[in-house]
Image 1 (tube, rainbow, N blue to C red):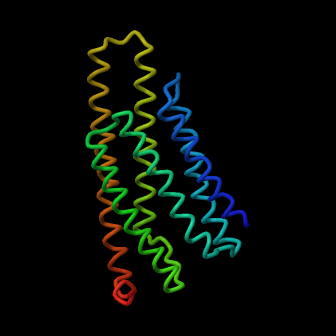
Image 2 (image 1 turned 90 degrees about the vertical axis):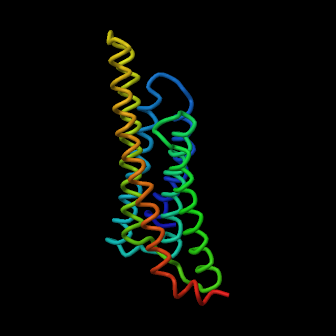
Image 3 (image 1 turned 90 degrees about the horizontal axis):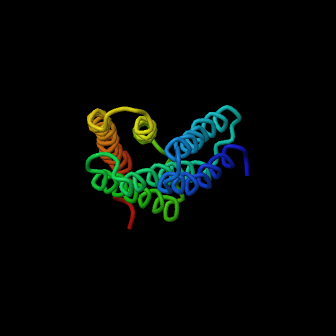
Length: 199
């Protein structure tokens, strides 16, 4: 297994660790989970760069890399539901999962019946990047709120700050959900000829 694929596998391994630290409440758990998430997200940045620079692009990597991204971001969205972070977290997670199952099914059919490995397109990568930004922002916000509650700040002011931060987090998460829909539609359009030929 080459280095880029090892980094992808590392991202998969870090996903349950991230999920555990996100939902397990202990002091500064948002900070810990955010650092783990950022570390996992960086493997996504470096595995692609290394693979292209060293000519280490493989079918295994093209298939596993977007799958690892899906695992990581889906874990975050499920964690957000458990912690009630953002408005409409359940619907956002539904949209994300619906899109990911649909795209993964097409990719699986393509690889098993047609021997074709469909790599993620630019819209899929943009969707993933925006999801990661939204998730990191949300984790930063809730860690900040935890720190604010340790300070002698009136609860009413903290409530206002929390409401504003929650709206901003929700906006970013909903934009990422919209990008999910757009990238999924483009994915289907780009592969419509293959889908029609599949029996």
